[in-house]
Amino acid sequence: MPGRIEDYALIGDLQTAALVGRDGAIDWLCLPRFDSPACFAALLSDDSAGRWWVGPAAGGNATRRRYRDDTLVLETEWDTPEGTVRVVDCMPPRGEAADVVRIVEGVSGAVPMRTELSLRFDYGRIVPWVRRQGPDLGAVAGPDAVWLRTEVPLHGDHRRTVGEFTVRAGQKVPFVLTYQHSHLGRPDPVDAYRAVAETQRYWRQWIERCDYDGRWPEAVKRALLTLKALTYAPTGGILAAATTSLPEQLGGPRNWDYRYCWLRDATFTLQALLGTGYAAEAKAWREWLLRAVAGDPADLQIMYSLDGTRRLPEFTLDWLRGYERSTPVRIGNAAAGQMQLDVWGEVLDSLHLSREAGIAATDAGWDLQRALLDFLEGNWRRPDNSLWEVRGSRRQFVHSKVMAWAGFDRAVTAVRRHGLDGPADRWSALRDEIHAEVCAKGYDADRNTFTQSYGSPGLDAALLLIPRVGFLPADDPRVVGTVEAVRRELCQDGFVLRYRPDHDNVDGLPGAEGAFLACSFWLVDALHGIGRRAEAEQMFEQLLRLRNDVGLLSEEYDPVSRRQLGNTPQAFSLVGLVNSARQLSGTPTQTTADSGDQHTRRG
Image (tube, rainbow, N blue to C red; front, side, top):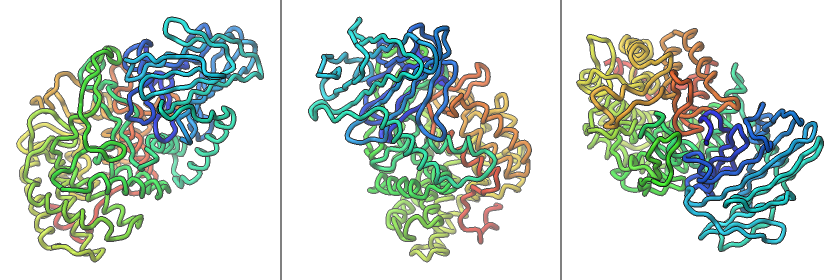
């Protein structure tokens, strides 16, 4: 059975990633890319869907584990009656092929060990043909091929490859699993010990560039390392999470594929990277963004694949029983075709941030931005599905209108501050029109709060972003009232829900979900912004305690069962952590553009 979501650590090679459980099993790995079919999918079913276990023969969870310093090299240790043993896991940055390196190290005594390899290509559906190929064990099925090299004697057992051995103090036993497309043949094997050393060196050199000097360096560095691990190196795209279909409610249907790049994350991600010294990564993300959104502005999507592919058809894998029987297991994401008005504003805001940071020429991509603005001008009044991708009826969501306002606001700044060509007066008038409409139709004066959509009494955690994008200053009474309303009506045991799913069937789905961790970090920022700094810091520390033993966060948290929920590790949660740490350490995260027109924003 798979472990709890928080039981998993991540190793990766900047093109894919594996989840390693406390018991020493790799229960999730897609090859050769993050969004490829999994060859280990036990995470979404059981052992029969594929996994690779290395651990004491007696089984059981590890006594302790950790990453080596600031790297993605994982050490898992067991104290047993026979002695202590350590397993070192890593995926070296991609060379000729994808490699998973596992080294068993004897620390004390003599510990009986066991390995069980169950390769199941196509998400647990295809059992490969396995045979001995010289010193290696080879497995082939259609386009996929894997080789396992080890000195441990291996044998077949009920469609598994099994090995038993004893490791003594000071002894090391390596395993190297290598993937390649089957038509290309066996790549040159890597040396396990050299691969571990090179992986350590790569991550240590990368994290040395971090210039965050606030009060939470360990948490920020681990978040940044994980964010880097979720980056697809060939294109610079950053995916939302390494997994699909980990549930937002155990046993429920809210199970989505997050192995894609969301445009809503762009500005937050750029803020986190630029604010911690990673301009090269921020520039690569910006360049991915420009390539992905190029084309007809009317065809702008909310998400794209790692290389910018637009088609992400959604289907279900009915042979997998789902994580803790949470079905269906989905591949692809139908939300890619939704109308989410905020995305146009998100893209314009992120490209504005790039201009302000100087990571691109001032006029780079301006023709594309003009086209986006033209589309936004003719469509900002339309109802949409909101940034939360609700599958209910479209509405006039307040956050979507606020981001439309932000798009025109940034355009005005591009002309008046940076000298770019454009009808600044017309855009300024549109900005003011949207502002007035939101304040008139999206604000409940009786309750002193903005609402989720026009005429609705419901709330939305995205309303916490109103001061962050500069729509209103943080000290505006309407902002303060909205922050207080969110705390009062959307908090569950101190953590923030995105919205109340049971209110007016807003998302068209049954069931509930956990507290959304990114929204909880937004509340930290909002509390800090309205001057409640002690409360903000207290909440931030509370959120840090939700991280698992190796510093990772998933998408959501259930305060009742005290379990992480949703896909993991979640980039949106980690970006929220980094930006809140920066905010509390005195680095502003607000993206306000045209500061000279603040009087127009008080409405």
